[in-house]
Amino acid sequence: MRTYCRMRALTYDGPYRVAVRNKPLPRIEHPQDGIVKVTAAAICGSDLHLLHGLVPDTRIGFTFGHEFVGTVEEVGPNAKGVKRGDRVMLPFQIFCGGCFYCQRGLTSCCESTNPATDAACGVYGYSHTTGGYDGGQAEYVRVPFIGVDAEKIPEDVSDLDALPITDAFTTGYQAAEMCQLVGGETVLVLGAGPVGLFAAWSAWALGAGRVIVVDKEDYRLQFARDWLGVETFNFMEHDVVTMVKGMTNDRGADATIEAVGCEAAGSPFHRAFGVVAKMEAGSPQAMNFAIHATRKGGIISMVGVYGPPAVGVDLGTFMNKAQRINTGQASVKRYMPHLLEHVRQGRIQPSKIFTHKVPLDQAPAMYHTFAQKKDGCIKVALLPGNSTLH
Amino acid sequence: MEPELTTPERVKKQSGYQAVQPPRRPAWAGIDLDPARRPGHLRTRDPKPFPNSVYPPEPQPGEPAVPRHNRPNKKMPPVFGTSTPLKGVSGAVKRFAYSMPDHAPSHWLLLMLGDRIESWGVRTKRALPIVLPALAIAVIAKALSD
Image (cartoon, rainbow over the protein chains, first blue to last red):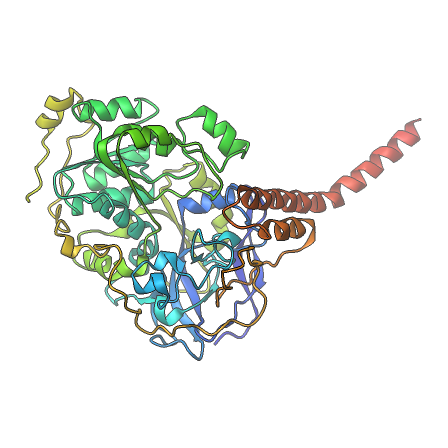
């Protein structure tokens, strides 16, 4: 039982600054809440959009972290199905399980958890635009609807193998699923970050005939080739559209997965205007690459994160090419049993992407290592000092 | 339908492009080809509540950290976050932003403005204990040298 009232937690200090500080412990605020003691939390690529001040209403003192696993510490009076001591993983979104959208399986569209906007449901540690819930890059975290949202981790699955299923793996899988593959298609994956890598894995699993991964970091492309056997090229050396068309009878990919989001490189104008000057919500360049590198009648699966304000996307070309765009945050809970089966059958070891596993107190330095893609960093796991990994 | 296997020869024949590394399809490739094995197929399923859900949830007591946006026909969600409540000038700007509906661009741009005001305010406040004594020393030093 917790005997003290403060904990260590990552806190936002304004654009490009985070620190680990003492914060009050979270408490049960709703009868269906629970408190989870975090054993491992990951830094997600989309956390960098928060760090860089691109997501509206990110407040100073707020704790990031929407990918975490841990043990149940405390359970509210109306939370059923979990008990103290259970090892659990939490989907990154907070959902009630009973509203119009949850009942239909779209937990990422839950109506019960975000007062700020209809644009998203509640998400842990992702600004007040997604409800203002503190995140899991801390020793403890409040978990609303814990009985519905938490998925118990099987004994034979390690914490670090379960951790990516809370977001990156599931998002990548759903991205590939949204390509509606029937077998043999060429799938282009923009971005060899964690989501892009899991999307490439999933594209193989879902029947792609060919998977091409594009990034600007050679070490990430090397990782993709070694781990997944995909084709790769560096878009700083080759023009994306020309290269992909050249590889596909001058048509383009059958489906493209945009796994980059609002800080895409490849356009000095959009980098200067959107990312540096923040005059638009980041750079839409990855979407523009996707529109031009996908064949006519093809599908674009978009899972990169963009802030709500407008960005300049080439919608005219998109419409004229009769493409379809499938989008959406992953409804993680729905996928958890299936992806756990892949892990338990030995088809994938998701923890391979954790190139850096560090104590929580080193999180600020790791944010910058991850953002600047230094030291071969692909993904970071933060380990709060008061817990033991399974 | 069995997926067509891509060979390095086919890649080269189609494009003239030599792959950096010939593609290697893993042994389990196509394992989820059958739509019945895909958790998100169909995307919208027949309505059924998740196990352990209690709906509608009772309203959470306390103040949400996010004031409700100005959409008169939308109910306040029953559960919300309470982290880092609004305060100061940035809080006033954000309250004004939340008085506009979330489909209005000004709603989001004012929130971004509020963020910038808050971060510059905090930076200024943290710099003052260093900047003010430094200025005082500079003024005194200048007065003494005159």
